[in-house]
Image (cartoon, rainbow, N blue to C red; front, side, top):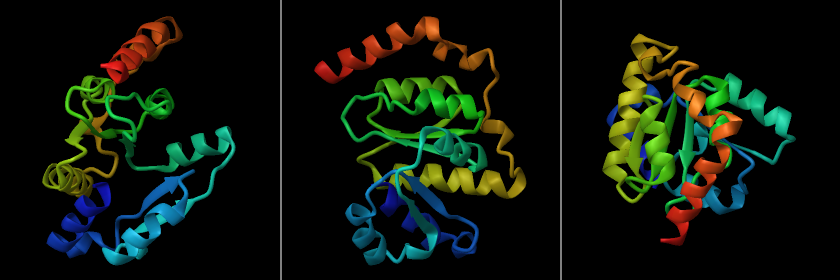
Length: 168
């Protein structure tokens, strides 16, 4: 899981413990707090209750990077277009080849298989090390042109592809 991958990175490179905080906006903390505590991650996680849409965009703008963690197999996170609009680097924790995976790859983001803790840890470590030298993570940013596939005229095709992926 994402939390297990984060723990591996922090155990391997303790210097990041004081620098990394993952903010989970809109998630029910009860579901994750016990795992976070068992893994010793309480200081590195922040669970923010559901917020109004515009406030969620503010959280995205303040973030260093955004994480798209698929909950449904082969799905497309509904917030992904908002993530793209924020201009922030994106990391997908998803099934390999899923719609989310493919779109994040198109945007120079990092992708990790959601069932592979080592892969998640490796990609998180890559981001953390890149951040040390470049706090803006420019290597993982995308241009406006590259993000144009999320324009409204493409929405039907994007959603159709995601729905077909779920039905397979």
